[in-house]
Length: 116
Image (cartoon, rainbow, N blue to C red):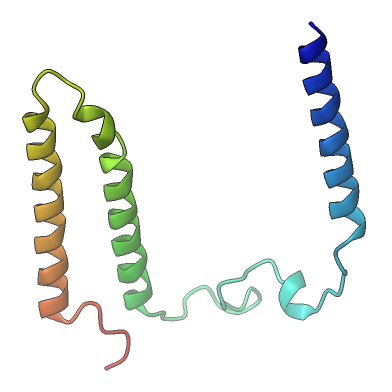
């Protein structure tokens, strides 16, 4: 019981100290960019019908796709402890090969070139 009280006391004191330091330490120097509701570069007061680059969205979708790949491969270390880990490695390799082929296709089509 004494150990639990000690751990709770240490965590409470540490969190209070960190919250106090994070409140007083930063320098508040807001400018027009930091006070803007949009940090993506769009003008919030302009027209919503202006054209924009679709390459930005292509790169964002590719990032999400490869981020999802990491999420799908996270359980892989626990898969080798199964009775038949070859199935787990087969499906992981299939996902990696499919994503690599997709990346090669996008690269060959010029979808990853930001400027022409």
